[in-house]
Length: 216
Length: 216
DNA sequence: GTTGAAATTAGTACGAA
DNA sequence: TTCGTACTAATTTCAAC
Image (tube, rainbow over all chains, first blue to last red; front, side):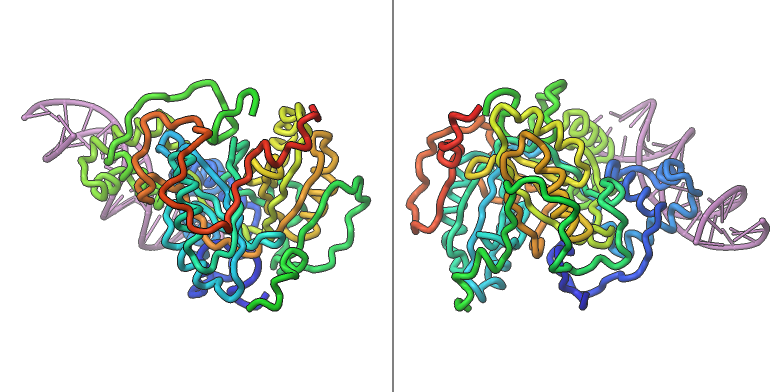
Protein backbone atom coordinates (compact mmCIF):
# COMPACT_ATOMS: atom_id res chain seq x y z
CA UNK A 1 0.00 0.00 0.00
CA UNK A 2 1.17 3.49 -0.74
CA UNK A 3 0.39 5.73 2.17
CA UNK A 4 -2.88 7.17 3.38
CA UNK A 5 -5.25 5.72 0.86
CA UNK A 6 -5.95 2.03 0.81
CA UNK A 7 -9.28 0.44 1.44
CA UNK A 8 -11.51 1.36 4.37
CA UNK A 9 -9.04 2.59 6.93
CA UNK A 10 -11.78 4.33 8.81
CA UNK A 11 -12.33 7.87 9.84
CA UNK A 12 -12.26 11.08 8.00
CA UNK A 13 -9.05 10.07 6.38
CA UNK A 14 -6.69 12.20 8.38
CA UNK A 15 -3.40 11.67 6.59
CA UNK A 16 -1.34 13.44 9.21
CA UNK A 17 0.15 10.98 11.60
CA UNK A 18 -0.08 7.30 11.09
CA UNK A 19 1.37 5.19 13.83
CA UNK A 20 2.60 2.66 11.40
CA UNK A 21 4.45 0.05 13.29
CA UNK A 22 3.57 -2.10 16.25
CA UNK A 23 3.23 -5.71 15.42
CA UNK A 24 0.07 -7.00 17.01
CA UNK A 25 0.53 -10.24 18.88
CA UNK A 26 -1.93 -12.48 20.66
CA UNK A 27 -1.79 -10.41 23.81
CA UNK A 28 -2.67 -7.26 21.92
CA UNK A 29 -5.63 -9.02 20.42
CA UNK A 30 -6.79 -10.20 23.78
CA UNK A 31 -6.57 -6.66 25.08
CA UNK A 32 -8.66 -5.43 22.18
CA UNK A 33 -11.18 -8.16 22.77
CA UNK A 34 -11.66 -7.18 26.37
CA UNK A 35 -11.70 -3.50 25.62
CA UNK A 36 -14.34 -3.61 22.93
CA UNK A 37 -16.68 -5.39 25.31
CA UNK A 38 -15.95 -3.14 28.21
CA UNK A 39 -14.34 0.10 27.23
CA UNK A 40 -14.40 1.38 30.78
CA UNK A 41 -12.53 -1.43 32.41
CA UNK A 42 -9.58 -0.31 34.50
CA UNK A 43 -6.15 -1.16 33.27
CA UNK A 44 -5.59 -3.18 36.43
CA UNK A 45 -8.61 -5.35 35.76
CA UNK A 46 -7.62 -5.56 32.12
CA UNK A 47 -4.19 -6.84 33.09
CA UNK A 48 -5.75 -9.54 35.21
CA UNK A 49 -8.17 -10.66 32.51
CA UNK A 50 -5.43 -10.79 29.91
CA UNK A 51 -2.96 -12.43 32.22
CA UNK A 52 -0.14 -9.89 32.27
CA UNK A 53 1.23 -7.55 34.85
CA UNK A 54 -0.23 -4.14 35.44
CA UNK A 55 2.88 -2.43 34.19
CA UNK A 56 2.77 -4.34 30.91
CA UNK A 57 -0.89 -3.64 30.54
CA UNK A 58 -0.24 0.07 30.85
CA UNK A 59 2.56 -0.10 28.31
CA UNK A 60 0.57 -2.04 25.76
CA UNK A 61 -2.57 -0.08 26.35
CA UNK A 62 -0.73 3.14 25.74
CA UNK A 63 0.98 1.73 22.67
CA UNK A 64 -2.30 0.61 21.13
CA UNK A 65 -3.79 3.99 21.76
CA UNK A 66 -0.80 5.96 20.52
CA UNK A 67 -0.49 3.82 17.46
CA UNK A 68 -4.09 4.34 16.50
CA UNK A 69 -5.11 0.72 16.72
CA UNK A 70 -7.58 1.89 19.31
CA UNK A 71 -9.12 4.97 17.82
CA UNK A 72 -11.32 5.99 20.69
CA UNK A 73 -13.65 4.87 23.40
CA UNK A 74 -17.31 5.44 23.08
CA UNK A 75 -20.63 4.80 24.81
CA UNK A 76 -23.21 2.85 22.93
CA UNK A 77 -26.46 4.71 23.33
CA UNK A 78 -29.88 3.21 22.76
CA UNK A 79 -31.07 5.55 20.04
CA UNK A 80 -34.71 4.65 20.58
CA UNK A 81 -34.49 5.63 24.21
CA UNK A 82 -32.65 8.75 23.17
CA UNK A 83 -35.54 9.78 20.95
CA UNK A 84 -34.32 8.67 17.55
CA UNK A 85 -36.59 5.75 16.85
CA UNK A 86 -36.28 5.63 13.09
CA UNK A 87 -33.22 4.48 11.21
CA UNK A 88 -32.90 4.65 7.46
CA UNK A 89 -30.35 3.88 4.81
CA UNK A 90 -29.99 6.29 1.95
CA UNK A 91 -28.16 5.07 -1.11
CA UNK A 92 -26.74 8.00 -2.97
CA UNK A 93 -25.57 8.42 -6.52
CA UNK A 94 -22.91 11.10 -6.54
CA UNK A 95 -22.00 13.27 -9.49
CA UNK A 96 -18.46 12.56 -10.54
CA UNK A 97 -15.80 15.05 -9.56
CA UNK A 98 -18.07 16.39 -6.88
CA UNK A 99 -16.98 13.99 -4.21
CA UNK A 100 -15.16 16.61 -2.25
CA UNK A 101 -18.25 18.75 -2.07
CA UNK A 102 -20.32 15.75 -1.16
CA UNK A 103 -18.05 14.92 1.75
CA UNK A 104 -18.03 18.49 2.92
CA UNK A 105 -21.80 18.66 2.95
CA UNK A 106 -22.03 15.39 4.77
CA UNK A 107 -19.77 16.58 7.51
CA UNK A 108 -22.35 19.23 8.25
CA UNK A 109 -25.17 16.78 8.75
CA UNK A 110 -25.02 15.60 12.34
CA UNK A 111 -27.91 13.21 11.93
CA UNK A 112 -25.76 11.05 9.69
CA UNK A 113 -24.28 8.27 11.73
CA UNK A 114 -22.40 6.45 9.04
CA UNK A 115 -21.39 6.98 5.45
CA UNK A 116 -19.41 4.67 3.23
CA UNK A 117 -18.35 4.79 -0.39
CA UNK A 118 -19.28 1.54 -2.06
CA UNK A 119 -18.96 -0.34 -5.28
CA UNK A 120 -22.12 -1.35 -7.02
CA UNK A 121 -25.18 0.37 -8.28
CA UNK A 122 -24.90 3.35 -5.96
CA UNK A 123 -21.89 5.33 -4.92
CA UNK A 124 -22.45 5.82 -1.24
CA UNK A 125 -24.55 4.52 1.58
CA UNK A 126 -25.66 6.79 4.38
CA UNK A 127 -27.23 5.73 7.63
CA UNK A 128 -29.36 8.28 9.44
CA UNK A 129 -31.24 8.28 12.72
CA UNK A 130 -34.34 10.41 13.04
CA UNK A 131 -37.20 10.81 15.48
CA UNK A 132 -39.83 9.82 12.96
CA UNK A 133 -40.48 8.85 9.36
CA UNK A 134 -41.46 12.32 8.33
CA UNK A 135 -38.08 13.62 9.41
CA UNK A 136 -36.34 11.13 7.20
CA UNK A 137 -38.46 12.23 4.32
CA UNK A 138 -37.68 15.85 5.03
CA UNK A 139 -33.98 15.14 5.32
CA UNK A 140 -33.79 13.30 2.04
CA UNK A 141 -36.01 15.53 -0.02
CA UNK A 142 -34.96 18.86 1.41
CA UNK A 143 -31.41 18.57 2.60
CA UNK A 144 -29.84 15.79 0.59
CA UNK A 145 -31.60 16.63 -2.63
CA UNK A 146 -30.42 20.20 -2.42
CA UNK A 147 -26.79 19.11 -2.54
CA UNK A 148 -25.61 19.56 -6.13
CA UNK A 149 -23.27 16.61 -5.78
CA UNK A 150 -26.21 14.32 -5.16
CA UNK A 151 -27.57 12.99 -8.39
CA UNK A 152 -30.13 10.59 -6.99
CA UNK A 153 -31.08 8.80 -3.80
CA UNK A 154 -32.83 5.65 -2.78
CA UNK A 155 -34.10 5.32 0.74
CA UNK A 156 -34.77 2.20 2.70
CA UNK A 157 -35.97 1.89 6.28
CA UNK A 158 -34.43 -0.32 8.88
CA UNK A 159 -37.06 -2.44 10.57
CA UNK A 160 -34.82 -4.13 13.05
CA UNK A 161 -31.16 -4.18 13.89
CA UNK A 162 -30.46 -7.83 14.37
CA UNK A 163 -26.93 -7.46 15.56
CA UNK A 164 -24.29 -4.85 16.08
CA UNK A 165 -20.90 -5.87 17.24
CA UNK A 166 -18.57 -3.21 18.56
CA UNK A 167 -15.69 -4.22 16.43
CA UNK A 168 -14.95 -7.46 14.74
CA UNK A 169 -11.45 -8.83 15.22
CA UNK A 170 -9.53 -11.43 13.27
CA UNK A 171 -9.55 -13.71 16.28
CA UNK A 172 -13.34 -13.84 16.06
CA UNK A 173 -13.72 -15.69 12.87
CA UNK A 174 -11.55 -18.48 11.79
CA UNK A 175 -11.30 -16.11 8.85
CA UNK A 176 -7.60 -16.99 8.64
CA UNK A 177 -4.48 -15.43 9.99
CA UNK A 178 -4.27 -11.70 10.11
CA UNK A 179 -1.74 -10.73 7.48
CA UNK A 180 1.26 -8.75 8.66
CA UNK A 181 0.55 -6.10 6.13
CA UNK A 182 -2.98 -6.48 4.85
CA UNK A 183 -2.89 -6.79 1.05
CA UNK A 184 -4.48 -3.67 -0.36
CA UNK A 185 -6.87 -5.72 -2.43
CA UNK A 186 -5.83 -8.56 -4.57
CA UNK A 187 -8.00 -8.32 -7.64
CA UNK A 188 -7.98 -11.94 -8.67
CA UNK A 189 -8.66 -14.23 -5.76
CA UNK A 190 -8.70 -17.83 -6.73
CA UNK A 191 -12.16 -19.25 -6.12
CA UNK A 192 -12.19 -21.11 -2.82
CA UNK A 193 -12.98 -24.80 -3.08
CA UNK A 194 -16.30 -25.10 -4.83
CA UNK A 195 -19.08 -22.62 -5.33
CA UNK A 196 -22.39 -24.19 -4.35
CA UNK A 197 -25.15 -22.27 -6.06
CA UNK A 198 -25.55 -19.43 -8.47
CA UNK A 199 -27.73 -17.38 -6.22
CA UNK A 200 -25.22 -14.75 -5.27
CA UNK A 201 -23.91 -11.78 -7.09
CA UNK A 202 -20.92 -9.52 -6.70
CA UNK A 203 -21.28 -6.00 -7.90
CA UNK A 204 -18.13 -4.17 -8.80
CA UNK A 205 -17.75 -0.44 -9.17
CA UNK A 206 -17.05 -0.54 -12.86
CA UNK A 207 -20.12 -2.56 -13.56
CA UNK A 208 -22.52 -0.35 -11.73
CA UNK A 209 -21.05 2.90 -12.94
CA UNK A 210 -20.11 2.10 -16.50
CA UNK A 211 -22.61 4.59 -17.78
CA UNK A 212 -21.02 7.38 -15.80
CA UNK A 213 -17.46 6.95 -16.82
CA UNK A 214 -17.35 9.77 -19.33
CA UNK A 215 -18.84 11.98 -16.68
CA UNK A 216 -16.21 13.96 -14.80
CA UNK B 1 -42.75 -7.54 9.96
CA UNK B 2 -44.56 -10.19 11.89
CA UNK B 3 -43.56 -11.23 15.35
CA UNK B 4 -40.90 -10.00 17.71
CA UNK B 5 -39.64 -7.25 15.54
CA UNK B 6 -40.69 -3.66 16.10
CA UNK B 7 -38.61 -0.77 14.93
CA UNK B 8 -34.86 -0.59 15.47
CA UNK B 9 -34.59 -0.94 19.20
CA UNK B 10 -31.04 -2.12 18.92
CA UNK B 11 -29.33 -5.25 20.01
CA UNK B 12 -30.25 -8.83 19.68
CA UNK B 13 -33.76 -7.96 20.59
CA UNK B 14 -33.80 -9.22 24.14
CA UNK B 15 -37.38 -8.64 25.19
CA UNK B 16 -36.73 -9.44 28.84
CA UNK B 17 -36.12 -6.33 30.83
CA UNK B 18 -36.67 -2.92 29.42
CA UNK B 19 -35.80 -0.09 31.71
CA UNK B 20 -38.76 1.86 30.56
CA UNK B 21 -38.90 5.04 32.46
CA UNK B 22 -36.41 7.81 33.02
CA UNK B 23 -37.33 10.93 31.19
CA UNK B 24 -34.24 12.26 29.50
CA UNK B 25 -33.62 15.93 30.05
CA UNK B 26 -31.02 18.26 28.65
CA UNK B 27 -28.45 17.25 31.22
CA UNK B 28 -28.84 13.60 30.35
CA UNK B 29 -28.29 14.44 26.73
CA UNK B 30 -25.19 16.38 27.53
CA UNK B 31 -23.86 13.45 29.48
CA UNK B 32 -24.49 11.16 26.54
CA UNK B 33 -22.79 13.60 24.23
CA UNK B 34 -19.66 13.65 26.31
CA UNK B 35 -19.66 9.92 26.89
CA UNK B 36 -19.99 8.94 23.27
CA UNK B 37 -16.91 11.01 22.46
CA UNK B 38 -14.92 9.80 25.38
CA UNK B 39 -16.21 6.65 26.92
CA UNK B 40 -13.37 6.44 29.38
CA UNK B 41 -13.74 9.84 30.94
CA UNK B 42 -13.96 9.81 34.71
CA UNK B 43 -17.25 10.72 36.28
CA UNK B 44 -15.57 13.61 37.99
CA UNK B 45 -14.38 15.09 34.72
CA UNK B 46 -17.75 14.34 33.19
CA UNK B 47 -19.46 16.31 35.94
CA UNK B 48 -17.25 19.26 35.28
CA UNK B 49 -17.83 19.20 31.54
CA UNK B 50 -21.58 18.92 31.97
CA UNK B 51 -21.70 21.50 34.70
CA UNK B 52 -23.12 19.50 37.57
CA UNK B 53 -21.73 18.19 40.82
CA UNK B 54 -19.88 14.93 41.13
CA UNK B 55 -22.63 13.25 43.10
CA UNK B 56 -25.26 14.17 40.53
CA UNK B 57 -23.07 12.93 37.78
CA UNK B 58 -22.70 9.60 39.52
CA UNK B 59 -26.43 9.34 40.07
CA UNK B 60 -27.33 10.18 36.51
CA UNK B 61 -24.57 8.09 35.06
CA UNK B 62 -25.74 5.11 37.02
CA UNK B 63 -29.35 5.75 36.07
CA UNK B 64 -28.54 5.94 32.37
CA UNK B 65 -26.62 2.75 32.60
CA UNK B 66 -29.21 0.89 34.65
CA UNK B 67 -32.01 2.06 32.44
CA UNK B 68 -30.32 0.83 29.32
CA UNK B 69 -30.01 4.20 27.67
CA UNK B 70 -26.29 3.53 27.72
CA UNK B 71 -26.01 0.00 26.52
CA UNK B 72 -22.30 -0.44 26.89
CA UNK B 73 -18.91 1.10 26.51
CA UNK B 74 -16.67 -0.03 23.76
CA UNK B 75 -13.31 0.61 22.16
CA UNK B 76 -13.28 1.62 18.53
CA UNK B 77 -10.60 -0.47 16.91
CA UNK B 78 -8.98 0.35 13.60
CA UNK B 79 -9.96 -2.78 11.73
CA UNK B 80 -7.25 -2.28 9.12
CA UNK B 81 -4.57 -2.18 11.77
CA UNK B 82 -6.18 -5.18 13.37
CA UNK B 83 -5.83 -7.15 10.17
CA UNK B 84 -9.28 -6.84 8.67
CA UNK B 85 -8.68 -4.55 5.75
CA UNK B 86 -11.69 -5.38 3.67
CA UNK B 87 -15.23 -4.36 4.46
CA UNK B 88 -18.22 -5.51 2.45
CA UNK B 89 -21.95 -5.16 2.49
CA UNK B 90 -24.01 -8.20 1.66
CA UNK B 91 -27.63 -7.63 0.81
CA UNK B 92 -29.59 -10.75 1.52
CA UNK B 93 -32.94 -11.95 0.32
CA UNK B 94 -34.38 -14.19 3.00
CA UNK B 95 -36.89 -16.95 2.44
CA UNK B 96 -40.08 -16.07 4.20
CA UNK B 97 -40.84 -17.87 7.43
CA UNK B 98 -37.19 -18.70 7.79
CA UNK B 99 -36.23 -15.57 9.60
CA UNK B 100 -35.67 -17.29 12.88
CA UNK B 101 -33.22 -19.67 11.29
CA UNK B 102 -31.54 -16.82 9.49
CA UNK B 103 -30.99 -14.96 12.73
CA UNK B 104 -29.71 -18.06 14.44
CA UNK B 105 -27.16 -18.68 11.72
CA UNK B 106 -26.05 -15.09 11.79
CA UNK B 107 -25.38 -15.20 15.48
CA UNK B 108 -22.80 -17.85 14.74
CA UNK B 109 -20.86 -15.74 12.30
CA UNK B 110 -18.43 -13.61 14.28
CA UNK B 111 -17.14 -11.83 11.23
CA UNK B 112 -20.47 -10.09 10.86
CA UNK B 113 -20.28 -6.71 12.44
CA UNK B 114 -23.74 -5.46 11.67
CA UNK B 115 -26.99 -6.82 10.36
CA UNK B 116 -30.24 -4.96 9.83
CA UNK B 117 -33.60 -5.95 8.41
CA UNK B 118 -34.62 -3.43 5.82
CA UNK B 119 -37.47 -2.46 3.56
CA UNK B 120 -36.77 -2.37 -0.14
CA UNK B 121 -35.50 -4.76 -2.69
CA UNK B 122 -33.59 -6.91 -0.23
CA UNK B 123 -34.57 -8.12 3.17
CA UNK B 124 -31.41 -7.66 5.14
CA UNK B 125 -28.08 -5.92 4.97
CA UNK B 126 -25.00 -7.46 6.50
CA UNK B 127 -21.68 -5.77 7.04
CA UNK B 128 -18.62 -7.98 7.28
CA UNK B 129 -14.94 -7.35 7.89
CA UNK B 130 -12.41 -9.70 6.40
CA UNK B 131 -8.66 -9.80 5.89
CA UNK B 132 -8.94 -9.88 2.12
CA UNK B 133 -11.28 -10.01 -0.82
CA UNK B 134 -10.99 -13.74 -1.19
CA UNK B 135 -12.26 -14.22 2.33
CA UNK B 136 -15.35 -12.21 1.54
CA UNK B 137 -15.94 -14.32 -1.49
CA UNK B 138 -15.51 -17.46 0.55
CA UNK B 139 -17.81 -16.23 3.25
CA UNK B 140 -20.59 -15.35 0.87
CA UNK B 141 -20.39 -18.34 -1.42
CA UNK B 142 -19.62 -20.97 1.17
CA UNK B 143 -21.09 -19.90 4.44
CA UNK B 144 -23.96 -17.59 3.56
CA UNK B 145 -25.09 -19.48 0.52
CA UNK B 146 -25.28 -22.68 2.49
CA UNK B 147 -27.89 -21.24 4.80
CA UNK B 148 -31.27 -22.48 3.58
CA UNK B 149 -32.92 -19.28 4.71
CA UNK B 150 -30.80 -17.31 2.28
CA UNK B 151 -32.46 -17.10 -1.08
CA UNK B 152 -30.02 -14.73 -2.76
CA UNK B 153 -27.25 -12.29 -2.00
CA UNK B 154 -25.72 -9.23 -3.52
CA UNK B 155 -22.31 -8.12 -2.39
CA UNK B 156 -20.80 -4.69 -2.54
CA UNK B 157 -17.40 -3.58 -1.29
CA UNK B 158 -16.75 -0.56 0.82
CA UNK B 159 -14.05 1.60 -0.68
CA UNK B 160 -13.89 4.19 2.05
CA UNK B 161 -15.69 4.91 5.26
CA UNK B 162 -16.26 8.62 5.07
CA UNK B 163 -17.67 9.04 8.50
CA UNK B 164 -18.66 7.02 11.48
CA UNK B 165 -20.20 8.74 14.42
CA UNK B 166 -20.40 6.85 17.68
CA UNK B 167 -24.02 7.58 18.22
CA UNK B 168 -26.20 10.27 16.85
CA UNK B 169 -28.32 12.13 19.36
CA UNK B 170 -31.41 14.28 18.89
CA UNK B 171 -29.48 17.31 20.05
CA UNK B 172 -27.18 16.91 17.07
CA UNK B 173 -29.60 17.72 14.36
CA UNK B 174 -32.28 20.26 14.66
CA UNK B 175 -34.31 17.24 13.66
CA UNK B 176 -37.11 18.39 16.01
CA UNK B 177 -38.13 17.50 19.54
CA UNK B 178 -37.65 13.98 20.73
CA UNK B 179 -41.10 12.48 21.17
CA UNK B 180 -42.03 11.11 24.60
CA UNK B 181 -42.85 7.74 23.24
CA UNK B 182 -41.45 7.39 19.75
CA UNK B 183 -44.29 6.52 17.37
CA UNK B 184 -43.73 2.99 16.18
CA UNK B 185 -43.92 4.12 12.60
CA UNK B 186 -46.67 6.26 11.28
CA UNK B 187 -47.31 4.96 7.81
CA UNK B 188 -48.67 8.12 6.27
CA UNK B 189 -46.58 11.14 7.09
CA UNK B 190 -47.85 14.27 5.49
CA UNK B 191 -45.25 15.55 3.04
CA UNK B 192 -43.19 18.31 4.62
CA UNK B 193 -43.34 21.69 2.92
CA UNK B 194 -42.49 21.17 -0.70
CA UNK B 195 -40.60 18.47 -2.50
CA UNK B 196 -37.90 19.99 -4.70
CA UNK B 197 -36.90 17.44 -7.29
CA UNK B 198 -37.97 14.06 -8.45
CA UNK B 199 -34.58 12.48 -8.17
CA UNK B 200 -35.17 10.51 -5.02
CA UNK B 201 -36.98 7.33 -4.35
CA UNK B 202 -38.39 5.66 -1.28
CA UNK B 203 -38.59 1.92 -1.37
CA UNK B 204 -41.10 0.28 0.89
CA UNK B 205 -41.10 -3.34 1.91
CA UNK B 206 -44.27 -4.23 0.06
CA UNK B 207 -43.03 -2.73 -3.16
CA UNK B 208 -39.74 -4.49 -3.25
CA UNK B 209 -41.05 -7.83 -2.16
CA UNK B 210 -44.33 -7.97 -4.03
CA UNK B 211 -43.08 -10.80 -6.15
CA UNK B 212 -42.24 -12.87 -3.12
CA UNK B 213 -45.48 -12.60 -1.27
CA UNK B 214 -46.79 -16.01 -2.12
CA UNK B 215 -43.57 -17.49 -0.83
CA UNK B 216 -43.80 -18.52 2.79
C1' DG C 1 -28.89 18.42 44.35
C1' DT C 2 -24.53 20.02 46.36
C1' DT C 3 -20.12 20.23 48.84
C1' DG C 4 -16.22 18.29 51.42
C1' DA C 5 -14.14 14.79 53.76
C1' DA C 6 -11.98 9.67 53.99
C1' DA C 7 -11.04 5.23 51.72
C1' DT C 8 -9.99 3.06 47.77
C1' DT C 9 -8.14 2.68 43.42
C1' DA C 10 -5.65 4.24 39.42
C1' DG C 11 -1.41 5.84 37.21
C1' DT C 12 3.75 6.48 37.32
C1' DA C 13 8.49 5.51 38.15
C1' DC C 14 11.71 3.05 39.42
C1' DG C 15 14.85 -1.27 39.82
C1' DA C 16 15.43 -6.48 38.98
C1' DA C 17 14.85 -10.57 36.42
C1' DT D 1 10.33 -6.66 27.28
C1' DT D 2 8.10 -7.94 31.32
C1' DC D 3 7.41 -8.01 36.15
C1' DG D 4 7.03 -6.36 41.00
C1' DT D 5 7.02 -2.84 44.15
C1' DA D 6 6.66 1.66 46.11
C1' DC D 7 5.16 6.36 45.52
C1' DT D 8 2.03 9.98 43.96
C1' DA D 9 -2.18 11.51 42.11
C1' DA D 10 -6.78 10.84 41.14
C1' DT D 11 -11.26 8.82 41.61
C1' DT D 12 -15.22 6.95 44.06
C1' DT D 13 -17.86 6.56 48.12
C1' DC D 14 -20.16 8.42 51.92
C1' DA D 15 -21.12 11.72 55.00
C1' DA D 16 -23.65 16.11 56.29
C1' DC D 17 -25.57 20.40 54.45
